[in-house]
Amino acid sequence: TWSKPSAMPMDAYREGDEYVVAFDLPGVTADAIDIDVERNMLTVRAERRPVAKADDVQMELSERPLGVFSRQIVLADTLDTEHIKADYDAGVLTLRIPIAERAKPRKISIGVGSGHKEISG
Image (cartoon, rainbow, N blue to C red; front, side, top):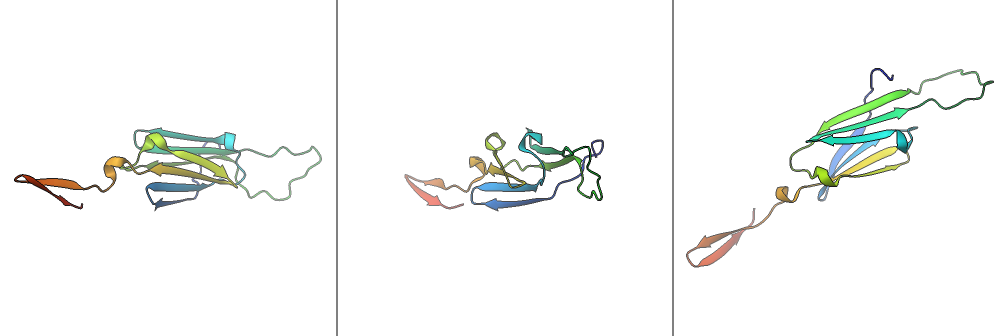
């Protein structure tokens, strides 16, 4: 309903150097989707509006929920929330969040006397 938002189904997984989150939003137009990030809290809010019907239409069955759908996700500090990409296709909203450079594995060199030795970590 509009007064109490419903949850939306989602999948979340890591793909290479990105964290991917996909939300099912069938019947929602792209302009009815709102995505916000505040600190590390991601909020996706969408609204499925009633379809305009002719005056002579008599509804026999109505099972598809209308109203507001929302989902909040706490994102890890290892994600780069400044570069989130969002795509909407065939009723699926896909967010791609890059892994922050500071969270990626890197080599650290160790100074021993006059030479340096590298280790992987």
